[in-house]
Image (cartoon, rainbow, N blue to C red; front, side):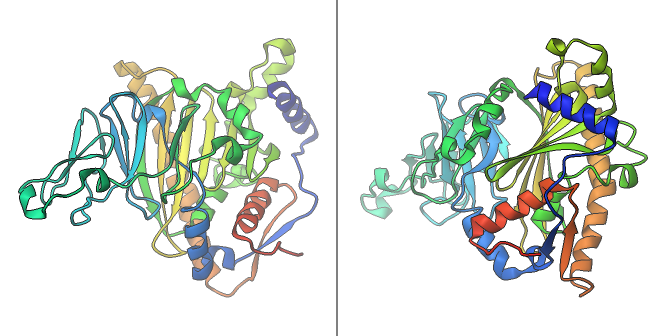
Length: 381
């Protein structure tokens, strides 16, 4: 894959071109504003579809846990003493309180802060204060409610409703071996930031799916690093890959093809459907896990940075802090303020459609995938 991508990128640099869709795509503005569509998205995309909630390195040791509620369902991920990750509804079976919050290490038991009912790392009810007041509760039957979960190639997948097991291969299809090849199961978590914005969750994903805007919006930040309007694109079922070219890619012309390495000279962007934007940024991995907010005009997301080696020195931490800060400055300072203005504009009545040009094929594919998954009719020109 790498050599093919490099050849395509070098061709595009020389020809001042980019991968093209067959035709422009007109996406209805209601895709970003319709409350009824949002509720269908919540059910189909964020309840019925497997989601990547974290990477395995977010819970590296037994007793590590992570509480997650961004998709509207309170979830608790916990690694047990045998090294397996469990997923539960983060709901005490007594009165419904969450039994854990945020993330941490070293737990053997989760204790509800309301009445101190307690559960072990496998979700079993192991403590009921004044238990005699509850008759003879069937502790095996009132443990934490399990959710389907799978750990695969460094990713933690879950479906946010009890039911059938998560079939990662069936969901990823042709993307599975490609993700496996990166060795993300050997990466280390460095930092995570939670962000909330006044924009539809799909508009967040859109931010990463074209390089057409780079020379204009990012002229003082990342435009000196990346070629504008130069990228390759491939649809991978509902998922996609887009590769943006760093300006250093032209240096590879002087090197034998057998030594070519795409990663240092590009940003490789994947959308792992429906809501994970995964970016190989040279020497580290950046992920955006994006979720709907309370309304169609709101979103909440987690930006995480993962590194191939643990950051154990002050020099390493300064380096990764600089990378993390650049990402935040670029997206928070440039992309998101503009996108929030777009979201407000969607309600003005100025247009019924937004247009993706032929040079923005990843955008069209993502929105086609959403409509297909929701069972909506294809958009016609």
